[in-house]
Image (cartoon, rainbow, N blue to C red):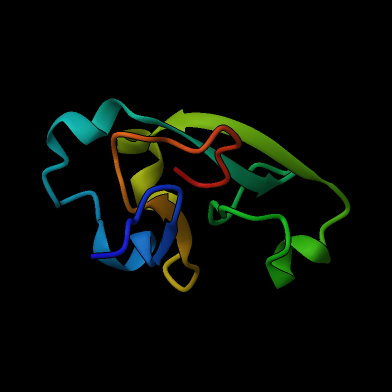
Length: 94
């Protein structure tokens, strides 16, 4: 069986999780997000999203997953490690 270590799976977090979904211990996991300089609107895992590319500037922020879940972009895929024991050094989502 091939190893899944160091591989990423892209998941539509904003479509799967809503504030009504119990998050359990994942609530406190800090994730790196991108948001327009106004701080309003949806949160994204990448600055390459079309609405952010047209923004005057983009800020990178870290928030607990439980705080961010209500504002996650529902149409973007977030890179997650397939082996949760090994986390990527450069987090660009989770």
